[in-house]
Amino acid sequence: MDEVFKALADVTRRRLLDGLNARNGQTLRELCDGLELSRQSVSKHLAVLEDAQLVTTTRRGREKLHYLNAAPINAVADRWMTHYDRHRAATLADLKTALENPMGNTEFVYTTYIKTSPERLWQALTEPAFTRRYWGTAFETDWQPGSPMVWIDENGHRTQDPEQIVLEADPPRRLSYTWHTFTPQWAEAAGVSEPDLAALRGERRSKISFELEPAGEQVRLTVIHGDCEPGGLLLQMISGGWPQLLSDLKTLLETGEDR
Image (tube, rainbow, N blue to C red):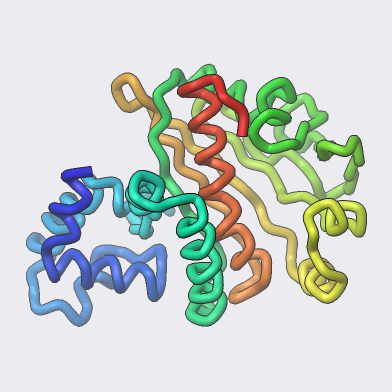
């Protein structure tokens, strides 16, 4: 955690994080706008933030996009906050996200490091024996691009839809598929109100991508939940849901304990 506090101690780096908090997925050129610094200086500050895992990057064609990564901040909260305080802070964070989430944002990006192998992490993302333990969900598919996916929740409810498909599967490096269909049974199990269910069903179908990269004894897992409705309800929900889910996945793989 020393790297996190060192990175946050500099006002320029905090401004860069504020900029990504306002609009995620910016290029170096975009981040330089408004800062009276050279591209080289900004690049050095971004490198410090990346080393502290406060910023994660992905490539889209020739562009390198930068994203705010909340995982280290969550780790700080887990270390020094009680269960009650953590729940209260999460509630306030969800409210802040709902009020401040930029209307043009269409994706959520999150990076975490898990002490495991790429092969075992791939199993944890695809095999029911794993997914049921930290997610409460199982997938019925052959994991071939274009193949259908059946989502099975912890109550045994099966969700099928022609648009629920595997988009990409390159084990153990990259996995992508379309997000599930919002059904009344899912809403009841998840505690989602009828108005919120109607709002979710009115949004376009999103997709989820997992990128696995070896990092010494760990695996760098980047989750990109994209193609969301700009400023939509789903984007608000997953911004709180994915960090908790990935924390449960990390705990399972590193300690063997369930969520």
